[in-house]
Length: 327
Image (cartoon, rainbow, N blue to C red; front, top):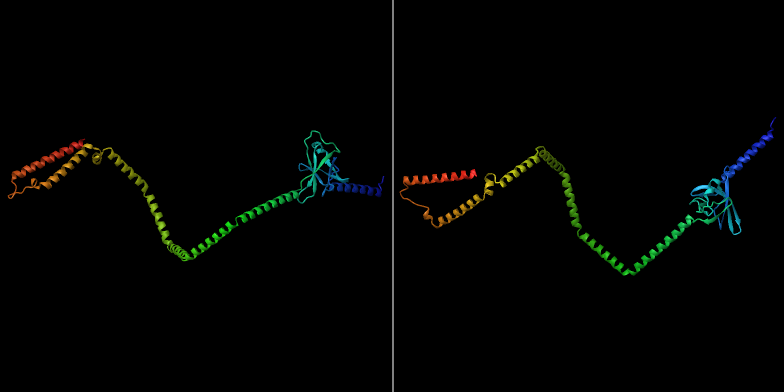
């Protein structure tokens, strides 16, 4: 059976019309492939709200506005919400109308209630206006301006009540600046001289930079030589040896140690010193007791007797020294 051309054109036109109608609905926010529940909300005014405006819940788009109708002194808004979200809407939920953003239009936000019962298809939300962001900013800006005005009034009052003190303070500041200017003028030559000396000093340093570098190099060389010569170790060895000598002296070892620790030797030396002092005093008082003159010289017997006395004294001294050494 042959299909006529007119039938084909008709079928094609119906398909095109259907697709166009579906596209218009889709552009209007209605998805014909998804089923929705219809709810209603009433407002005093809906400025900026349009059909197909977005409906969201917790920031997720769950539907759109299907129709807006003026009913007496209120505005009736028909809200379509996808059925998959219907079980999430308690009966005491609120449809809050507000701005979608600074540059966006209006939208409806579903604020979920806490009731156990769910809202049925065709239910009515409590309509409420959400505080506008721009209005909030304007209110806050007004409060800020009021605060600034109060602050300025307080500052003005403070200035008026302390005008004399402020005038005196300004006068003192002017006097202080005048004094500083005078000091600077009188000390200008000294400052210039100091700067000139500083410049001269820096020029001298620059001119003698080679010498300074040579001195630093010599110091580095000297420190390296000290390090290579093991000066620190030698100094430590010397200090250790000196500590050993001092320890030996404190222990009474050697002549110096015995001199410092032998109390009998110390007493003997003290007694000998006292006897020597007495002898010198007696010598000054009676010199003739110790000095004899002979016109004819000494005899051989006298000389021999003196030599014998000297030898005996030397033997006694040697004996004493040996006795002390044995101790």
